[in-house]
Image (cartoon, rainbow, N blue to C red; front, side, top):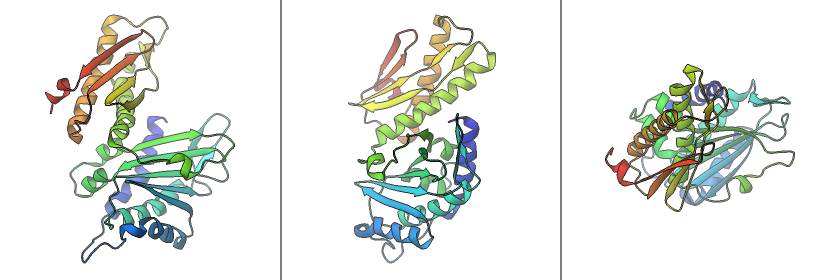
Length: 278
């Protein structure tokens, strides 16, 4: 997803943070025993074609909304009804997740358009981030950076919510997705203005206590990446990682691995290197 598209998504969805807070005085409005059913009822009342799934600490919502997405032979973009679709569904989601005693840590929105079969927009948010944004502890640009947005094409066979959210999301893997995008954007800002280097999609995962990031940086004119440029790639990447992990106070990991596939180089840093920043 391009940065321009991410900004458009963030603008459309970010305004809802101020509308999200609702009180729980006198007990939860939506008890945990029926949190999925409660959200489903709200969505039906708003005439939305949606399904809800609650797995451990993750709440998933799948919404099909005409006009939400636009698909061409080469791309998927936001449709004319995208803002209205997200306004309706996120208002309902926030109403429930902020007024329940269920231990919800993440919510996932899977948005599709019956007129663009196979096209999906995924949004993932960490509920603590939403609460902190409502309390003005993090600003809007930072909230946007903490939200996962992804436009994708899944093929002709429809994707079910059970397939898309088969299990609970863990904070480590959520941070790996977020960090991969942050690293990509930071590298683009640092390296691309010169016109000498090209930055592609960076990947990230969290497995067996290790963060693993694949860095797609190459000379714009082709050839190999020189040692100085590679050192800069690693330096920018580790700076982003250290800052984000410190902001989340996340220490449930053993190491961070940075890999540059084109050169075959990788850098493995133990957790202690990042604890200094914290």
